[in-house]
Image (tube, rainbow, N blue to C red; front, top):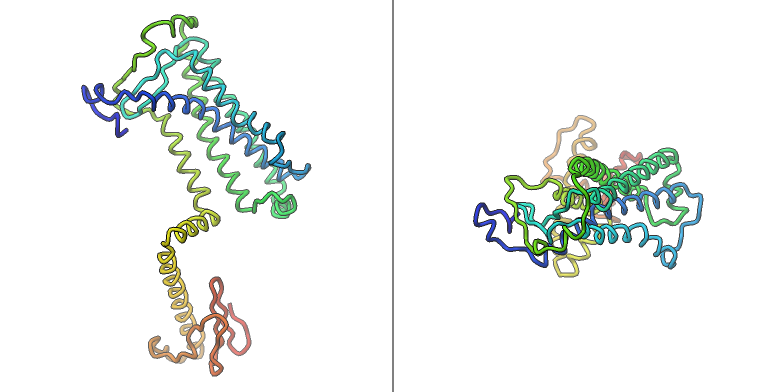
Amino acid sequence: AAVWSGKGLAFFNSWDGKGWCDIMIKIEVGAYVGVPCCIARIAYQLTEIIKAETILPDKTRVRYMCKEFAIVTFPPIIAMVLSYFVQLFRFGIFTYSGCQNIFSTSWAMIIVYAVWPFVVSVVALILSTRLLIVFYIKRKDASDILQCTKSGLTLTRFSRFIFFCFLIILIMFPSSLYTFIKTCKKVTGAYSYPKIHENNSWWTVFKLANEKPLLSIWLFHTMSYCAFFIFGTSSDALKMYEQALRAIRLGFILDYFEKKRITRKKTVANNFLLKHVLNSKGSTKPNLMSTPATTMVTTPGTMASSAKYEFYSDDEYSYIQPNNHQVR
């Protein structure tokens, strides 16, 4: 959008994208097939885990790795290779949208390009639905199953994966269905390899000035942000960010905010103590600044011996014990 956003001659005289566009148009073709393939594989693997009917395979074995390659990597590679046979030009450049494939409108385009994202998306949707059904059936025992199978997943992580699968496939399936129907409507004429490639027009960089960007290319941006908010905000990810900041000597920023958080929690706890405990018999509320230290929150593991109320504060919970009766 930044490189190819000009109008008129500014757009047609812009960078021709050679090298970059040659790679990106192939990645885009592979992504339309590869993303639903990954979702299908994740959904299938999660279903096997939650069903707990077989022993989980060893991920370091050659057989398992070959299976992963055959399901996740091989189909996108085949799609990228086959797309060459229906390309009219080396690539095209559209306003705001940048590098784009330009395919012929023959029947071969359906077989080579349009049908595979749709078929794989249907399979991924079926497997994701199956996963949700199995999880619903075994929801009461899900936590124990995840622990016993040594899958390395907690119930929260497992739920995140389920939500991720459904979110991505609900984006990819309508898109692939729309592309498939639209492609079928545009089919005209027979396929001829010589007419497509054996001419000088193949090396021509085709530029088309559009008033609006193609919405299809923004699907991957949307899915990227969705993936980040689902997995990039988890507790494991936050710990990783903390380790990264401390590794580059910026841990003092975290320490500052942690100190502020603890101070705020103690202030809230002290106000609660003064309001609901010290004034429980109708006494007037004392000034917080003039309150004796024996009634204030103490640090973990310490307590004044003359305090009337024992009040402990740690990082997660606070306990009040007036007259040896615990109040939470």
